[in-house]
Length: 333
Image (cartoon, rainbow, N blue to C red; front, side, top):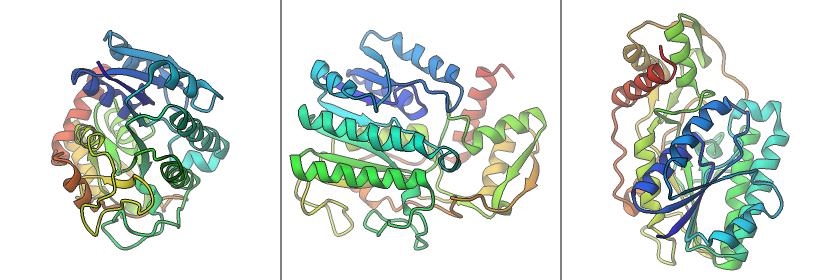
């Protein structure tokens, strides 16, 4: 049985990914800090399901703890690493930027240092569509320049890409960075808009709709995202690009890949999908754009399709119904 390290294993994406890896026969070492950025009880509920599997090895601790990751690499010698743990959230990064320095910058430094000492076959690190920042040409392509981040959160994730590239070049570490586009689904994050909207609609409260509803997002269903990550885990960067659109570095086994549905949805249409799934009508308060936010996202996914056979085709109505059904069951509504 081969070992894989998943950081952020009790998080939304880490939980779903770890379940799929366990089902595929991997031994999963799952690191998580269970921090209180959102309800730790939800994280513990996810973790409890993973801990029920004998092939899952839970580790509770912070990425940035000096030596923690080096010790984990030395003890378990993971063949692959999927780094999902991070301090997330655009608006929280305005309020508490130090959290992002510690978790995203120091934490990722500890990870790549551990990998330098005990090299895995392939490392996959999470980035975000937010790194495209002020770019206006769409869809966003991995080969686009991305130097105008509009939040400190996005800036730390772009820094992670640069940090990982330097280690890929210096030490020959194969690295794939994936840029997520607005992931949603069961067991999701309570700080995300769809979670907040569902809670408010089911309780008869008013939802805040920013930029007066003139937003578009490339929503990505969790099962599709996990399938894409698993496919990319098998696509270790080498020296031959798959085409002119490949982001493969000319000096390192390193590439960046978008993971999105490549089907941007108007915010009002997204709200209507939640209303339909809930069977209720939303009460809306229209507000201006929030600081650090962007009006639209849209993933170019040719590279993802070239590297994997992952299908990014779950209809929004289907995915949202799955989420609302889970929400009603989990919160007994």
